Structures are given as C-alpha cells and as structure tokens.
Length: 339
Image 1 (cartoon, rainbow, N blue to C red):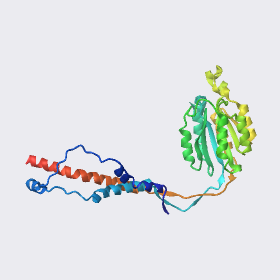
Image 2 (cartoon, rainbow, N blue to C red):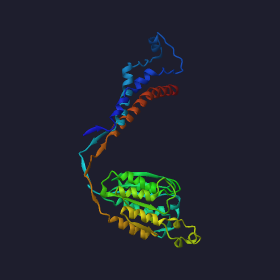
Image 3 (cartoon, rainbow, N blue to C red):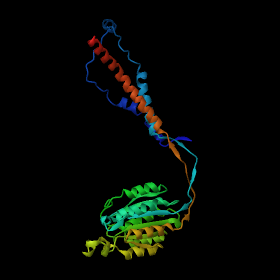
Image 4 (cartoon, rainbow, N blue to C red):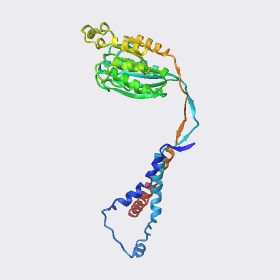
C-alpha cells in the first residue's frame, strides 16, 4: 500500500508564494533603459530580441521543482503486509561500565594485552548478535547512566554502538545504582518473566544518585533479574602496578555485586581472564527464553529517491537553459573575431 510517512510536509507548499508577498522586491543594482524603438534596433543588429515568457510559464518549472522537493520530504513509501516477529525471547539490557578504570590494560586477547573495555567489546559483541529472538538494549554508565540503545531486534546496530563506546564518555566515576535504576525504568513495561539485566563493571559505586542495593531492591520488586560481572585481573596478575598496590582491580566491590545478584535472583561472575569471560558468556547463553505476546511489523520500501532524482534533473535543466544562450553568444562572438 502506498502512503506518506510525513504527509504534513505538504503544508509547506504555499511557503514560496507567502515569502514573495511578504518580502520586499529584490533590487538587482543594475541600471535599466526602457526604449520604444526595439524593432528598429533589431533591424540594425540583425538579431531578434528574446521575448519574455508569460509569468506563469516562467514560474512553472520552479513550482514543479518545489513540489518535487516537498514530495521527497513527505517520504513516500510502499508498505507491505504485516509480518510476524519472534514471539519468544528475553528483554535483555546490557549495562557496560565506561569509567576511566576500564582503560586499564590488564586483560589478554589473542595473546595481546588489551583494555578491559576492549575485551568486553570483543566478547559481548558476538553475544549480542547471537541473541536470536531477544530484544537487546545497551546502557553505558560512568558518572551518569545513559540509554545508548532501547530494546530492539536490531542486534547488529546495538553491537556497533557498543564497539563505538569510549572511555569516560559518561564521566570518570562509576554510578552502578543509576545504571540499575535506568534499566528497571526501561524493563518494567515488558513481560515479567523476560526482564534481564547484565551489568558489567570493574569498580565500586562512587557516583550517581541511587545507592546500588536500593536500586537492587527496586529491581527485585519489578522482577528484573540482574546478572553482575566483575571485570579485571587480580592485583597479583597486574604486573608491576599490581605489586605496587596501584591496580584498579582492587577497587572492585564484589560484596555489593553479589548482593545485587542474589536480591534479584541472578548470579555474580568474576572475570579475571578472557577465558573466564567466555565461560560467563556461555552461561548466559543458557538463560531460558520466556513466552511473549506476538508482535507484527510491516516492511516499508522508501520511494523518496525518485522525486529527489527528478528534482536534481530538473535543476540541471534549468541551469543549462540559463547558460545555453550566453554560451552560444560567446561562441558566435569568437567566431566573428576569428573571421
């Protein structure tokens, strides 16, 4: 079925004529001479002056151009029949810590040292795309928590947004409680048996407005199951920094993360190496999907490109029409000089 996504765009149709009525007439700044013996001048020069077109014929091409642009703005599209989407799965939010400590390079990936955030991207990128039938969303948190992606079946886009996450993009601190509160707000409208939050952090709560255990009690009341993952090598695994007692890994508040998971019926995992993080990913793969209300979507084929192409072609023709007589006149003058 043919329809317009933004039909209100056609309300802009009279805009050029309104501007012409309201704005003052432009002054070209050139002197003009009116003469009554045009025919005699034509006879002397041997050329015929180009007659002016009637006003409506002069304006018609530009009116057509404006209408084509409005047509493209209204976004014409062909909408197909409703198609069923998966009716079972989880509503899974992934909350990833992007505070400054996630830049610590104490993890291994393919034999190379990588930062904690980079390892999370590598492993959980595949985890996101493999969630067949699940709605997946992404929360990034530091000093504040932000919803980077709402729950969606477009898992590839969620992975791209995770790959593009930067250290300190949400602030240098760690607001675990705010991240849980935001997740509860986004999940509370979904079916109760499918609300899952996977929270990944390497530190203790030192920012935000909500205390983590308070947020966990709210999550338990809303039947949001939280799986917490503590990332980072142990101090003795962190090389010279660890031996000096400067490893950010010692800041991890495991007691709070364990309590959050227990309050909500989830589990706590400790990820000291990439192998342990892969085992955690495998464990999360075994979460049982929950039946949900069936949903349907109608595929839409955008057609605005045709009107945009026609507008571009018409613009080129109008430019050529203006330049063509001048080009012919210049060529004629050159030929006369050469002869």
